[in-house]
Image 1 (cartoon, rainbow, N blue to C red):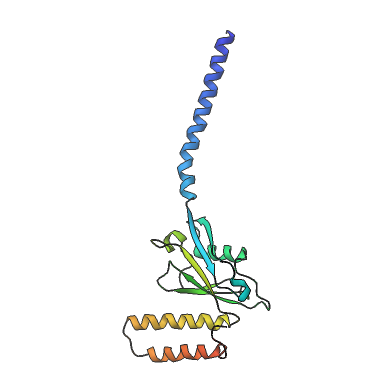
Image 2 (cartoon, helix red, strand yellow):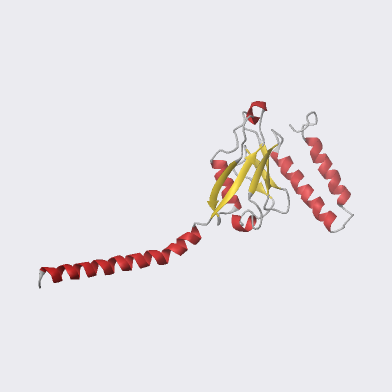
Length: 191
C-alpha cells in the first residue's frame, strides 16, 4: 500500500470517528438544554435595622426551572441571603408572586427548615407559571414564629370561609386570629 493510500484511509477513519462523535453530541444536546432551563427569580427582603436600609437587598438569581420551591428556599437559607440576627431569633414571612395567597409560609432563624402552607414540592416552573418570579421575605423581628405561622393559617382559613359564605365559624376564627395577634409584642407596631 502506498503512503498516499495509507493517509487517505487514516483521514477517512478519523472523519468517520469525528462525525459519529459529533452526531452523538448533537443528539444529547437538546436533552441537556431541556434539563438546563433556568428560571430567573428576583428575591428581596426587609431591612432589619436603620443602617441596613441604605442599599437594596434585591438580587436576581438563576435556578433550574425543575427545582422545587422547598429546594429554592433551602438554597436561599444556605446562601445566607437573610441576615443572622443576634440572639438567634428572627421571623421572616415568605411572600411569593406565584401563589394565590400572598404569604406562603414562615422561615425562622431558629428553625431547621421553613414551614410552608402550599405544596413546597412543586417545581418552580409550575409555581411561577405565568407570573414574574418574585420572592419577598418580610421581617417580623423576634415574634414567635409558631404564633406567626398559626396566624397565617388562621388568615387562610378565614379567606376560605369567606369565599364559601359560611358565616358560622367565621367569627370564632376571627376571634382566634385576634387572640394570636394579642400574643405578639403589644407595645410595638411591627417589631
